[in-house]
Length: 252
Image 1: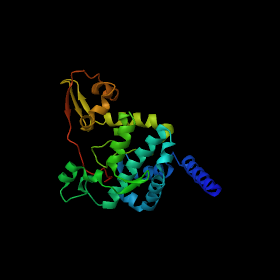
Image 2 (image 1 turned 30 degrees about the vertical axis):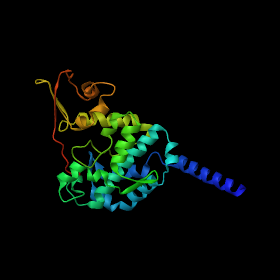
Image 3 (image 1 turned 90 degrees about the vertical axis):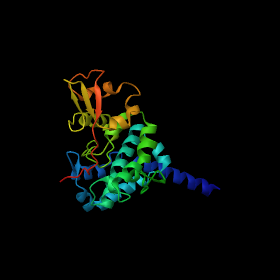
Image 4 (image 1 turned 180 degrees about the vertical axis):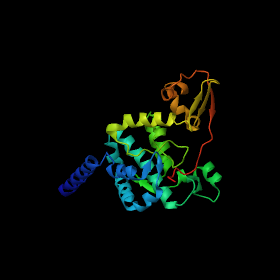
């Protein structure tokens, strides 16, 4: 009995030590992003060259247990999940490379893959002790567990229409600054969001249509996006949602 108690104590200490020693700066992922991402566009060929390093980083994420994850602070959890989403998305792309779009993954018909969400429902990695897919990270964890709409500007589904993939890892100590920067950077991209003052018309990314409830829990949609525009947006502005560009966000 004493031996069993001792074993449980050792296992508990080992898990605690791993949780404490987990690299919350995500240094390896940070280096890969700095090396292979420029102006939000990704060198997937570069990630293929560094696939051993990428897989090593992904393994550190996979090793985190549910109990260890629960010991993280909220900012540590969010950074962990955002980085996991982005890194496993890169993994998904390079495992199927070359492709023109993430929607090419699945059946031969990309429109079917998109309509059914096949690439995002594909279980191809393990996280917190179980087989997972990208939708689980986004919808069951990030959106469900955190009242933080700016996560939609942080997670990137490998498409031109998405927010830019940062050239750095999300870091708990920088998270607030990074999320706000991602939001403002996305809103200020005229190819994705713009305001025609003369006609009082907003041209917005479909992200604001798909996830509108996330953006309007505490304020109106216009109030939420106002800090990304120099002109004051009138509350009765007409909103037109732009077509989403699913082309791969690849460096040419």
